[in-house]
Length: 149
Ligand SMILES: [Zn+2]
Image (cartoon, rainbow, N blue to C red; front, side):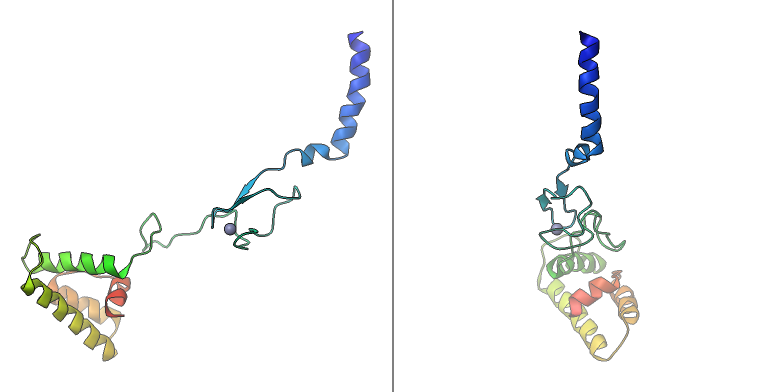
């Protein structure tokens, strides 16, 4: 009895596989690596775009520039101001004390110098060198840009 059962069942399995139903049965839910959207595809082939944000690169994570923080969080102008305030404060020998009028004047002066240099058409490199020379703070181009914008 078991043998004849096998003979009857086997051709059915074969037909199912040939008709491609096995393929349809393995549809996977997709997740967009750009916007986090998840959706069910209508066809087994790879979707061309994310239905939410329309990116064709939904299956590839966004590449992060080397100069950015590892977590990809964009630097805000306020972050930069805070870090510059601390850096300038340290450079001027003010340590980690609360900001005072003297430190604020120094920061304001540094910003005024940078803005004047930018208005005069100086390069970011020149501005960075001057900040480093006069204030002992090393700033990269992005930081300078955010400050004098
Ligand atoms: Zn998306």
